[in-house]
Length: 493
Image (cartoon, rainbow, N blue to C red; front, side, top):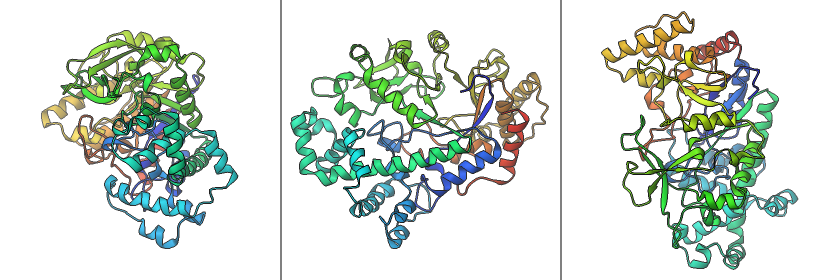
């Protein structure tokens, strides 16, 4: 982030874009959305992880932390390559709610038809495979297809990622192996084109990098010594956070935690390569659960909740030595002072969330009048209620108190607004507070720009289903986007 320039951003994941085929893609609607942001003067498009989704349909539980989600491959672009017929494209249409179960059972069938017509000996594809960027992913997904289950259930030679077993898998199931390479090849072609288009418009892509990897993933399978696993490759300790404002029993994520001593002995080679890859793929990277690099919370793998975990020291600032790029730290959660000092030592901007600001405490660090410039202000995140959803759920008494606190803050920072009796006026006030704040970057979720309610929430932490399903019915425009354009200009973003 340019330390001398104020900027605005919009948070909208690729999956949430409109389209004919059941989920957002890297096709026409993505380009249309980029043009809308450009017309509004928005300089950052923030997305969630682009990775292939895993358990719970979550992009934070991927089978590979460097994969691209095959669901995002635009089918119309495949049809233009003559890899799909008109009839196959028509059969793939699905305009209802986002249904991951239907996608899993139907989309891969469509993609396999495209693969059957692909020219394997294309020099560009051969070079892509030879580069080996997705080798472990392709082998992992091949084994998943052939043997099923978790990698810890495979026969020992394959389970322990032994070279002879990998070569046998690659040779005996070569077409399956090439299918998974093909998916990543097509994804990267489409993603690179979209990103280049956004950059030409002056829009920077703010990507998202989860701190942890999913257990049943190519990352853990191929790098088992970097994680706290037992001799049978089962997790000994798993990640989470203690009780906080999201969950009274804490959050038990289940991801295996890193063995940072082993990582350090390698010069953090794997982790740094992963981060550098993210900084190549995006213009800026938000590191999710950044505080876990300073101190992390680990829980016994057999625990039922996250109440009785313990804090351990992470690698700290040395993890970023030799890394050059724009990084934003998701520093939310329990604050014991250590993470603040760590964040300051890195120089990375942290996050301020307006939905956490109005508890009646004037020293609340999420209140705009308490901001320093080197931060990123959000109305809310993908883990929050939408602003309209939060407000509409308040009782009449609580709403009056909340509105009063918002009005006090508006007065403190010199914004003259009349707050009405409905959530829409609060949404508008939140968006304006974020854009008017000292924060160098202000990011607004598309749901808050459009004043959408809780049925449009992206994720509710701690709930196992019903998440990651929000989609726009059409590319946004009209009054809401004109209002965004007006305030982006007014507040010099």
